[in-house]
Image (cartoon, rainbow, N blue to C red; front, side, top):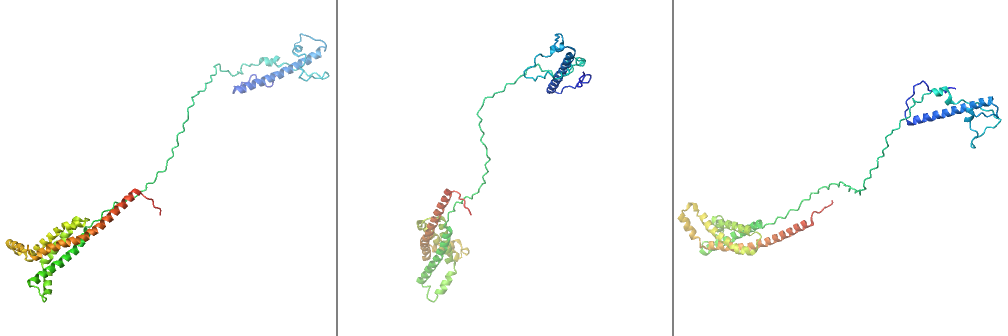
Length: 327
């Protein structure tokens, strides 16, 4: 009988893979085994019909192929059962003999030896964890204004103000000496005191020595500045000399000197060198410088103390450093 699944004369599909080929081979073997069993059963039935049951022909190929004893684990058909129709051996059929199995090529195995790459073993090295670098927030700059060094206070302005009061006192004393000298000489009486005073206030002879004394006192105060009283006592003689020269200069302005010749001006200056008012100007200028200089020195001492305290406060502020004051 012919195999309905035979693919004789049809194009053979190329196997898609090793698993497909193996599967098809297993299916072919299973079909061939089933066909062989059918053929064996068919031959056995034919032989049983033509030969007595007790005759045993050793030359019968069908009987030789049949096993004599069934295995113990297979079920034995009862004797009374009708023998199944023997099926022809599919391998002995002409169709099976004409099959060309050469077209179904088994996958050609690669004869090259399989090379298993040895795993590369690298020596274990201690893994040093890199320190995590955390970007620190950039600190915001805080600008702190540095305290300014205290400027030392001076005493020059105070010396000028004190010198102005000293100049007024000089003018009063100088005028008093002037009136006294006039009284001694008989030029001043009780009747002409007022006119003599008013006349003296309008002369260069009074105000030039006063102005010279004031500037001399102020210059000395600017030089001494915060100096002690001893400096005023020692250098007060210079102010007295300036007041003495102011008296002579006042006489020249009173002349006036621009209307005098050089000889007349020299004679006038020589005549005023030892006058009572010239000596009085020197003495008054010297004494007023000492006593008003004491006042200026007292104020200078106070200014010096204030400067020292301000410097100490400045140094304490620098040592403490900047302070953050929260509102």
